[in-house]
Length: 167
Image (cartoon, rainbow, N blue to C red):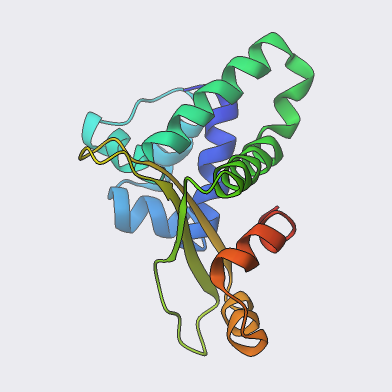
C-alpha cells in the first residue's frame, strides 16, 4: 500500500479509535508485529482485514484518497501534506455540495455530555441503493453544545464552521 494512503489511514484510525493498538487488536485481531509489518510494506493484510481498513472510509472518501495518491505521484512535494490535503478536500467538497443544495447533513450520534466526539455526515443521494456519495467528519463534541446553545441549524453551522473545526 502506498505510504500516502497509510498516513491517511493512520490519521483516521486515531480519529476514530484513539490508538492504533485498539484498532489492530480489537478490530483486525492481529498482533503489533503484523501491524508494523503491514505499515512498513513487508506484509500484506488478508482480504478480510483489508476490507475492514477500507471500511474506515466511505466509497467517496476512498476515491478521494486515490486521487490524492495520484497527486503525490505527480507532485512528490505534496507527500508530506497528504493528510492535510485529504481533510481540506473533504471539507471543500462538503461545502460545495452544501452550497449547491444537493447534500444533506446529519448527526450520526447524539453524543452525551461526557462524549468527546460528534460524528457528522454530509451526503448526496441518487435514489439508487449503494450509489450515495458520503463524507464523514468526526468533530469535537463541543460542536453539539454550540449548535444547541446558539440555537442555529446544523446545516448553517456546517456551512460556516466545518472547515476550521475539522482541519
